[in-house]
Length: 268
Image (cartoon, rainbow, N blue to C red; front, side):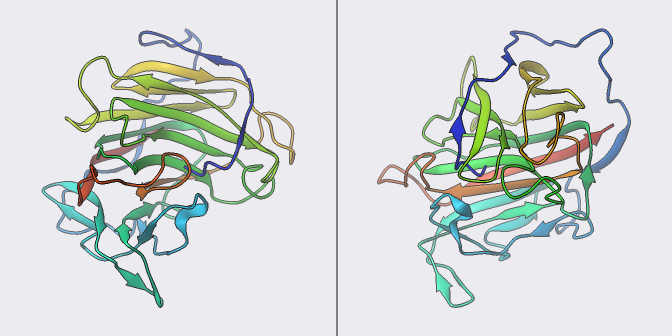
């Protein structure tokens, strides 16, 4: 999700169908889940982030804990971006949205992280499902790493990206990854399952159970490989608006827009 980076070539392999090494570690024990079946967000699992600072990417939204932006409805977590000039702590912005995380409520080292969600679309709309280290063991971003399970430019609603951020602290950080194009329709038409299988020396991305990318090499100025992806990480989900990654909304962008999350499951 944090995009300030310099791209470099790393070992990335694409696959056209489900793939698993015969000796690869399987993740079949469910250790954490939320299916949003209650009347409100389970705060033992989630923190709602509140900030007005644009997420480090010159984004245009303010993140609030208002039910207009974050709520549970019809067995889904709703993260809603609005054009409503919301204000917090004396700061107002044209756009508001929602962002949640599991930090100190759900932190994992290795496993299958799986989210079933329906994504919003529109110029300047940026949904993301991603992970950050719970402790900056190897230094500031991105020396301690970031795993982007899924992010999408709303103006390209049939394409999602999977990315690793690593290397040295900004501005000497790097990112490696690839994109996946849906064969028919868009990710805004229906629910899809986005996942990573995160192992000590391999991170594999899956969309609807199909392996679409894996990476086996990365680096950190703060430690030896497999640093930085050998520490506990937590999960974040949000809908950003604007920023250098995709540009601002325009006259074609319809508000409000929602990312609907049906379930989150963690296997180890």
